[in-house]
Image (cartoon, rainbow, N blue to C red):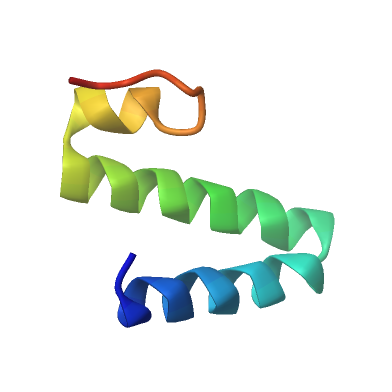
Length: 54
């Protein structure tokens, strides 16, 4: 994992830990949308489920 990826993960973890449930719902929707935009439908659907998308 690159340093930039580590920084992204740490920042998101800090945001989520202090967020309200409503904000967490918003962030989850945003993250799923970003995953879809970056990875495509099949890979985004498999993220977080422990499934390999290969």
